[in-house]
Length: 304
Image (cartoon, rainbow, N blue to C red; front, side):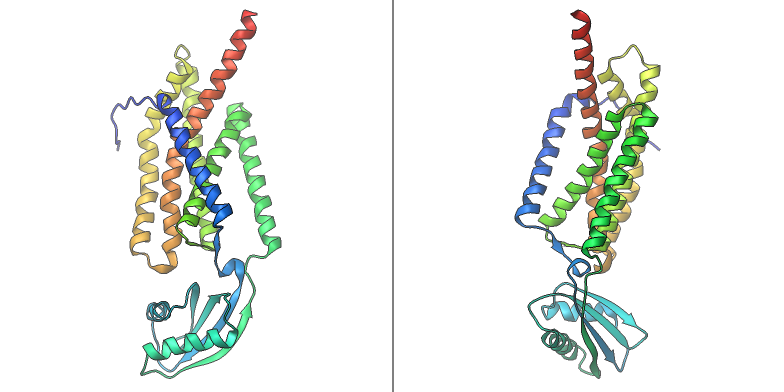
């Protein structure tokens, strides 16, 4: 299956436009990060846990709808057996008693024929503490270094590995910025989405780099810019088809998957799109610019 039979798109000619668009996205993401800041969920902030008992089974979707209509924001639901529900609510200015009463009142007004009681109310700490967050940052750093070393060994160029990591960071940070712009909560589910995006992003980049390396040997008489264009056009169908499968599944989950998976699917839709974009319009142009300048410096040295 191919989207294009014989594409002949000059990607290198569009490099300044594509890099400028990426810079605008990075600047916008940085501005929103420092001005607005992330909307951290209960996994990062902690909150209040309220355990509810009912005499008849009720669906979690109905419970979610009743709490949302009552103005209870940022909460998680968990069923306990057939007649128990745990509600975890993000920390607010309300006390335990006030939050417990708000939840109880919302459920009693919605389910008038049920006997609803509060079994316990307590504070819960964040699932991600400072130590765990610091360890996660270290893990990202070591992953980035590992990718640079791997790509440098495989393609005999530390620069290619560095550019691959820059593209990966572009995708994750760009998705993170859009999440902040839209006001969505940052929780462990979104962190999982960011890690998944990173995996897809570097995979596309490796495939493209592998084709460029092959063509540098097969098309030695061509200019480096032509080799990059030919390589991108050769893997373009493969890149689009592979990413499109993830994009379609993510879009279906975003539209029909429900509240629990909604933010994860949203991040995957954005991240998958940015992953394809960065591999084609960021990695290749940056590699071209660097190699071009390196070869120009080498020619000047010979002329001297």
